[in-house]
Amino acid sequence: MDLYEYQGKQLFRQFGIPVSDGELVADAADARRATQELGGGPVVVKAQVLTGGRGKAGGIKLAASPDEAEARAREILGLDIRGHVVRKLWVERASEIAKEYYLSLAFDRGEKKPLFMLTTEGGVEIEEVAAEKPDALVRLHVDPLEGFQPYMARRLIYGAGIDDPEEQKQIADIVGRLYRAFVECDAMLCEINPLIVTPEGGVRALDSKFTVDDNALYKHPDIAEMRDTAGADPQEAIAREKGVTYVKLDGEIGVLGNGAGLVMSTLDVIALAGGRPANFCDLGGGGGAQGVVDALEVITSDPQVKALLFNVFGGITRCDEVARGILAALDQMKIELPVVVRLDGTNAEEGLRLLAQAAPPNLHVEPTMLDAARRAVELAR
Ligand code: GDP
Ligand code: MN
Image (cartoon, rainbow, N blue to C red; front, side):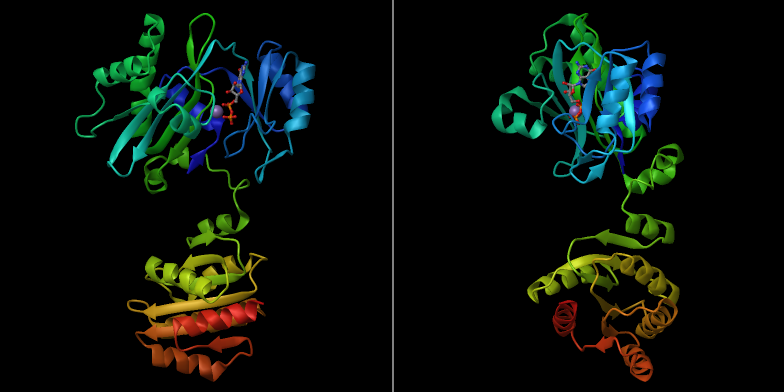
């Protein structure tokens, strides 16, 4: 789960990482009021969207007064930043910037260890630094059994060539706190870009990118609550409510299967047959009638879907149960889209018999996965 900048900064603050004071607002008049409350300006008005590069896209603007903050807020609200429409703004007391550094801690799956990265070349995309000035980027893995040790911060700081003793002290402190935030929040990524030094020598996090492991959210109800269902994809929100595994893609065939492996192969076979999946649902090991109805409700709420493809291999899941689910859903939901079904495995004969008996006009049963994919592609045209 990705957090908004203001949420990440809230966690930074909890762990003692210095951030600027600010307020979250949803309209221009509130941006004016917030600016007054923050001392009248200057402030920086920042689009809260789950994508980077907001500055370049016009989503981050300085304002010297409450009037200006209101005007800038009006410009930024409603802006579309790479498909993310700005609905909320973070109005923050503006900082003077002498230097922009970069500090992050992320999971390195290859090494199976958290990886610190620090560079004095901050403010730009880290991929750019890695490509153009690889020597300026210091990388350091932390062995989770050893845990974070103060020498690691020193190694990062000296490696990056930060030689001001006051900066060294503050950054070493922030590095240790970032590690604690990362571990205690079960984060996958904590990125500060830029980590600034003010003209007075104060070090502060000016931005935050914070990603928390979805599978650990049950341990962090306060973080789980930060999820903003309004900003999420509407189908994904319905799916989450119903407990259905759902992924949105951009083709025209809705895919339902049981088990991640089978679903992945179904996507490949659709591509082989010349089509493109619109989305997929994994029914998992369940696949009882109600599960099928729930999944169909999610999948068919996507207007891009032109045909549905069921690919079920019965193991624990019984094909007759799935067939009942399909028939119940067609009956309850008045689905008019073509539905292609391939059933095999446990109780397949019984399932196919049920489908043949009911024989709704938009139901097409195919014997193999490839036949089913071809038929779905044809019907989606
Ligand atoms: P991003 O573009 O989405 O990464 O958003 P950031 O929060 O990193 O802001 C982009 C850039 O805006 C920063 O690199 C800064 O140069 C600038 N910026 C952000 N906040 C301030 C501020 O308080 N004062 C000044 N002078 N510049 C700021
Ligand atoms: Mn940034």
